[in-house]
Image (cartoon, rainbow, N blue to C red):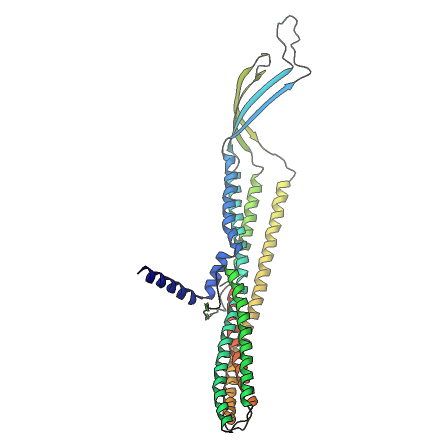
Length: 416
């Protein structure tokens, strides 16, 4: 019974591998998740948490320990005769522990944290922009694989038709209706089809391997690549991640301006210092003593030669530069979309004429088929017409896939 279960599991696994399939949208999702660059999104988040924790420590008590031992060439003496005041030692010692507690700094910590948060969004959005730009490469690989699949199907259909025709020709040669070497022409054409099939399969394998590396998922020649029916909406607004990136950059500049504006705000701190030394706070007591000092202190950079103001003016210019980059991006993207829309219309026109051409080719091939059976034309002439039909059918398939590729690229350019 156990052996039966094992065999069943193996067959089930083999069947699932053999029937593996993938869609274009799945490739998009996988490259966004598995491409090495995608790891930076979580890394930036972890880094930001660490940076925020460091900034927040400025609100906690700051503890400093200082110790020193000195020897002075001269010391303070009391110029009173017969005062019996012992002069200080030339060697002096002091150890202090100081605690500083921030009371007020004008919201500088909060402004720093807000800036860090916006910087995180900017960095993560830059990663999304780079991942979005990979979609066109995914499109090219995916639809090239589809083209190889469809071309192989057409080659197989051509092979089947030639094999059937070869049987008819051999029968015609037997009864003297068809020229004796006609079958050799058909056999040579079948060999050419085998070569073309091998070349297609080789190219397809390279494409699959490349796509597999991008999405970090095992793919092989048995994988079914589903043909998508891509829909495009020409009148919708741009939804590119670059637009969000430009907005985050502006927010980052604004938060940086707010941070700089708070740098000259007065800072109020409470402090406490405890120590042990010789002498202590009483300079006339020449002995080791403990002592302490408590209080508050205010730090305020009253005048900075307009450095703060100039920094904010520089950031305002940077914000204007981002605005020009945004407008340039929108202009170039809309131009690219217009070109892609014209390309879609052109390919759709090609497909319409392809269908007319194929109908004409089928009529010609039908006539050639009848003529070959009656010995009116040679097998070479028949193969010429069959090849013409195959090439036109291949062109139709190519144009259909190019149309889907153009629509998929249009959606990527638009950000849909």
